[in-house]
Length: 363
Image (cartoon, rainbow, N blue to C red; front, side, top):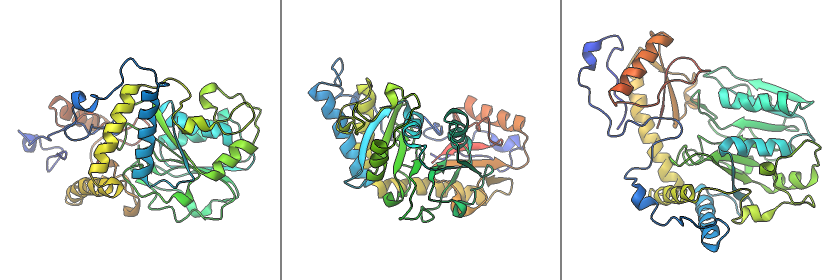
C-alpha cells in the first residue's frame, strides 16, 4: 500500500480513521521485505552450523554472485564480490586502495556522499581534491568535472531523494576511475556499465535484504589500478583485495570472502534475487518502483502544501523519495511522523538529521 495523508496536514478531522497501508514499512534502509516473505520459506535452505568455506557455503555465495550478475546485467569482464561492512565498507575499501595517483573529485549532494568527501579530505588527506557539492535537493555541475581525475559520486542520494538522470555526462574515454555508490539505485535504476569502474551497494535497500554485507563490482580498469598503485597508507585486512605479491586476490571474487559472513543473510539475499528474477529481472523491478513512485507523484502534484525535495523533475528519485511539507516546522513534522508511527500507518519516515524536515519514504 501507499502512505495516505490527509488533504491538509493541519486539519485533524480529515485524518479520522484513514485507510491504512497493507505494509507500513517505508524505511529507506533496511527496507521492507519482498511481498509474501516468510522466514520459514526463505531460509529453508540455509546451511545452519556449516562453514562458509565448505562446499555448500561456497556454493551459496557463488549462486548469489551469479544471480547478481544476471539480474544487473554486469559485463563478463567485470568482477563481483561480497565484502564486509555494508555499502560503507565497499566504498571505503576502494577509496583506500585506489585513490592517490591522480587528482580526485567527490561529487555529493546529501549526507552519505558528504561522508566520502570527509574520508577523502580528513582521513586520506588527498593532496589534489575537489569538493563538488550540491545543496540538498540539487545536483552540482557534473559537466564541470575533469575526468583526468578520479571521481566518487552517489548514483542516488538516499537522504535527499536526488538522483543522476543518467550517466551520459561520464565520457567513455576518461583517464580517471569512476567510483559509484549505488546503494539506493542498484536493482531499481538502469546502470550504464561502461561508465562505471567501481560500483557498490548493500542488500538492505532495493531488495529489502539484511544489513552488514556490502557488494562490490569492479571493472578491468579498476583491477589494473589495484595491481599497479602501491600506497604506503595502512591497509586493514577487511580492505585488502590483493595478495602478498600485489596481485588481485581472485578467490574473493570466486566464492571466498575476506571474513566470516552470515549464511542466513546470504540465504535471504538469494531469496530476494530469485523474487527479483520472477518479477522480470531488472526491467520488472524498475517498472515496479516507477509504478509506486507514480502513485506518490500523483498525490504530490494534487497537493499545494507538499512538494519533492528534488528541485529538477529529472532528478527525482524513484526509490528514496523525499517529500517536503511547506507549512510545517521541523517540530510539527516530527509530531506528524510520530502520529503515523503510533497508528501503524508509516514507520521510519523521519527525515535524516542532516536534511531538511520532511517525509522520506521508499518506493
